[in-house]
Length: 615
Image 1: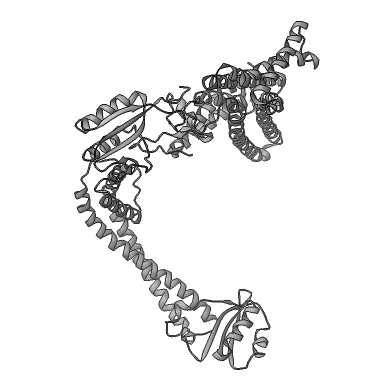
Image 2: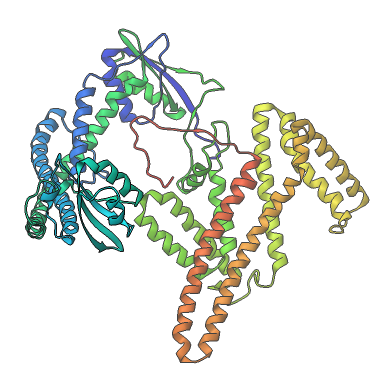
């Protein structure tokens, strides 16, 4: 459980005639993480013979599905025949294309009419017809908004051979200017200096007639098109409903066929043969070899190869059903490397423990449990995260019973009275930090021992444990925090010095500079107490305010109810955010830094669907 699943590497070679059957069987088995072949002295293998046909059909299917607004994600896989799909799809495609084309035509015309109406409404403010803005060699037209009140005076300084109409609109001056084309460039420059903003009249330049009459005609046409648009949308909805099952199943089937037909591009080849390499879980390797030999009629060669130390082996986490939920947090940080510990099993228990210790309220725990249960149903992609938060809510309920806290009310005293037992809370938090940090150091020791031997492991990891023991034994008495015998005092000095020498040997002066970090990491767990106290004191303050308002009389009861709901809702929101963030931070920073690097590649078996996730 603490290690990713063991992998083997399989080499397969055979005649190209066996390739389709080998690919098909690999897809069915869904366990082979294909190693992509890079072109060297051997070429890259060509896709299967129907690749172009399959790809083209798949693109058309997806286009039609998109136009019809069909959700094909949850389609069931059904065994179909490609020629039959092509035949049936041709009928559907023709029907859908006509409906979609009609819809687009209507939408385009509606869009044009909207632009035309907007332009005509502006023209009608000046009682002008769009005919006046037809292209002419003799007259240049300008139509738009200008900020300056000096417009006419400025234009008269250029020439008097122009006509102008203006109207105040939207706190600006709307102007239509007609000038002899001889002066068009000078007018354009002058208008630019006056911050002239031109209105595009291109949509209406081909229209003829009075602006108001044109607006009436366009409004009627717009209303008619809106009716036609509704009918067109209903037609598409009908086609979608009628053919959604076929299209969804066909798209699912063709997606798989496309995946199978293009996977040989990751294989190597010679003129007559192909070969592939794949990582396969060790417990599946024998079955894969047997199945491939059977599928190919014994015409292939399959052998297990040794895995090199520098290979990027894909990571398949190997956890129980409950622990799988905490893989969300592991992947959010980074997948472990192949030779590292998988921290998911540790997070699965310590995250709810830390969260529960901080929130620690029965009512709050029940409310958060109900909330995350609801969200789990509404957002299936977040199943793992919400399952962990459900476990954390159970932790809050358990600690709530231990504290005797119900929405900030301490109904009884069983274990710790959080509003008074600060020393006990601090002691528990620091002890949790000592255990958590040192367990991480022990895992780091095992990692170092496996890769670099006992001395390296002792110097790099066990030295920190000796440093803590020695520091407590000789610094405790010096700071009047602990009483020990002289023998233990000098033993502490000895252990501390030995630890410093070991650190110096393992990490140089960088290790010496980081000596204070072990204390700060352990003391960081005091946040378990601090966050918990913040939550309980906010709850107590809300309850005191509600009690105060309640005793002021019945006219204050509605205000008391509002204070109760708003105050506890706010505290619950903080009770979800703060404990979860601080809990996962203790794992990522204080715990992981002792043994975990991450950086592994995800195991992606050929043929397996990628699991949906919030990440």
